[in-house]
Amino acid sequence: MTQTDPAPAALAYLARREVSAQWRGFLRALVETLDANLEKAGRDGLLRAVGEKLGASLPLGAVETLDGLEARMNDALATLSWGYVALSVDEADRSLRLTHRLAPLVATASDEAGGWIAPVLLGLYATWLGTQQGDTPAAEGGPSLALAEAVPGAIVFRFGS
Image (cartoon, rainbow, N blue to C red; front, side, top):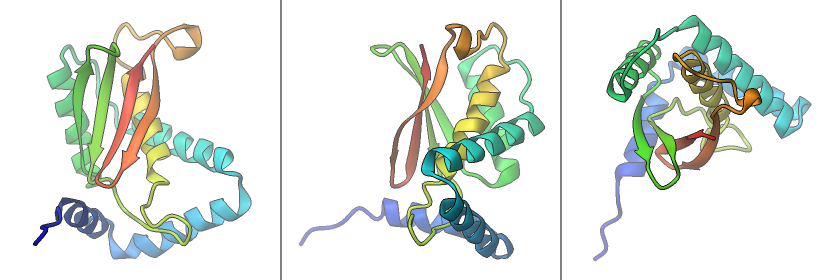
């Protein structure tokens, strides 16, 4: 008898549960409307801008250590009930990895996994990372944040040059 890993199902359940019923239908309708009226790149750009605005409204302040940054990010995420992030350094790639778990899950007709939240998180984290001391904007050769992978239960971002 083979035992399946219950973790992805449990994480999906918890992520759905964290989205208040009063907002679930609205968010589904909003994202489906964006999908119907914008190409994916345009939709994702708009959602990233929303994440940037959200990040600016929840400033972290300057932090001197990765542990401190992770703690501040998680404190801010907790105020939103948006899950949590783990930061790790990828020595081989010379980058910072951000692994977000328990993102709010609102499925749409074309996206049962609720992947539309990834661009929102991308904007949120880009804003937070961009406000840390010594940051040079990506446009000026500084590090940039990009989606590395989105799998059930985790959205992973890469921050580096």
